[in-house]
Length: 355
Image 1 (cartoon, one colour):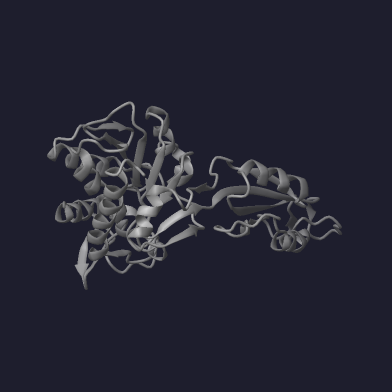
Image 2: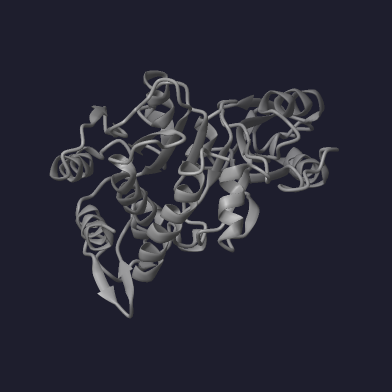
């Protein structure tokens, strides 16, 4: 069921550098897959899109999505990140785990269902760009306005083929601790740097009241601190970056409002767009996975799932712990199994009227 072909596609994608914003060549290679199987597609920037053959406006729409961009290679690589090496039943290469294995598996499954009639849902697949660094904006979120209304989504990310039925949202804040600038030789009772411990302690101990049954608490982490440029000058400000992982009890707007009201420093959110995502555990798609022995859980990491507003699940081969690591790899068996599991879940769901 396109397993060999999917593996060949992944090996080709590994050979082609596809850092976020520079995925044009991997986009070209993905286009060739659809051309080989005579499947119409369209391209928006480096996002490749295709719909099932028997699309019916009266039916709801299922999105299958994963991305073909990568981060830059980890500095600790000892292998060539752009050489697909098969060893010990593993396929090594940049993007093999995150999220090439997911992408080629979903493309194979979409191809399998493409010609089938009487599906409960229409299917659209989007091989998306700029997931790893969305600042360019030519990503899944930019594509969604060009698509019909999406009613349900499967986002391919490495989950060991277990179902992430909820995903934390993200708000990144740029923070400023203000003080009085001066020469280091003079007294200064308003040194911004000396305020840092108190501010760090506040963030370490502040907690939000609502705790999610699936996603747990909202998590606040200070990830960057920067201040000063000369040894003899007390800076006017200390700059912090605050990473907030938001559970499904709060919207990002509510998180922003609460922190703006209480935080002991100035906060500016970079965006409030990446809200938490979820799907009911009793949704027929989820139940199809549970019937096959797949586990459900809440994911702390962000993905393109945050770009869709409909019920969605994150599901894919590979292990999130390998993502962005040196000598990244995925087991070949994981890809083969994923194609089978995706197909079985969707067959149960799509061929039984989505019930």
